[in-house]
Image 1 (cartoon, rainbow, N blue to C red):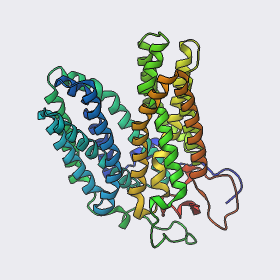
Image 2: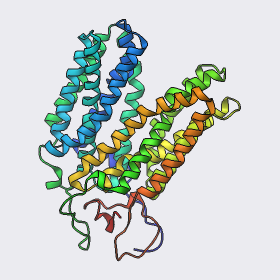
Image 3: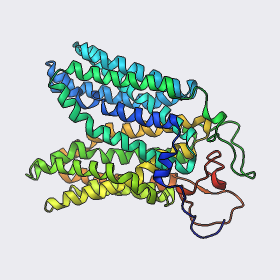
Image 4: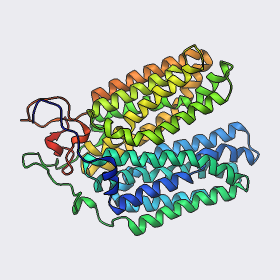
Length: 437
């Protein structure tokens, strides 16, 4: 290995997508369609108030859904490890369909809260299973691109879901929840028919096998997430970065109102972020993945915190748009690499739990952020935006300290290897002659 920069991956984005195996195409399609029809998290508060309950009661139901989402992501990792990705996805979607159908007919408040929490659990359970299966089926050097493609489907779905849901509500809430349940049932059927019944690691072109004779074999006993101190730093970074980013949904509208700016400013900021992410993230991933993985992730989370903090600066409307641009640049830089990182460094036996832990910390940040941000905003408006800047810096420091890839022992030292040049086979410890520290 030379001391110069690592050569970029010759496999392009569109060639990677055209070469996707059928199970991965099924997964990406199922994830996108299911997200388009995921209405509970978006419209639950309106549904509860529609039934005649107060805002406090509705907020408690939404909180129950959020707590369920945090628990569901981690539970998904446990279920995947025990029963396999295919059955974890099927069970998650079937139970999610049942929960959505129950919401369509349930009017008692206590039962609504329980069902909302259950729906939060079941709608998140499939995510670690799907990510782990994609990592099993896709060569490591292509994983960031495929993760970006998966995020594209999720982002398009997140954009379409509110529009479709509003139209369905004009007919009835029951119809909206029925469509939600039907999409989950469809995903479960696709998973049953098209996903592999056996673990892909056992055979096939994407099988896990050492890429280099000198690479060390996988450890006989895989370490647990809680004993991987460097990965715990990554989880902490994800939590604080998510807590900062979620302020665009909660505190940003309050800031715009406090500045006596028109409401359309908020709509344009959110639309600008969504449009750039949807149209640019996947093409830009080709360039981003040439960066060292530590650089891509750490710089991205820093920009997220800095961009959100821009919303607290005094000035004209253009300051808000500048903040949106910086925030979006951070999201497109860090998210594909960060979301694929657990699968790249986790021992195969613990892959689903590593993925689940990252998802749980992201959901936890999204749940805690609004509480922290609004309390600080009530004390003094600037406190929230200082917090976002600080959280961005803390997240960056955590990622710099926690994210790892280094040349294997005996390899001449050089610059940190790029994510794009990871080899297509082998365990995370063996890819391209690298091993985690």
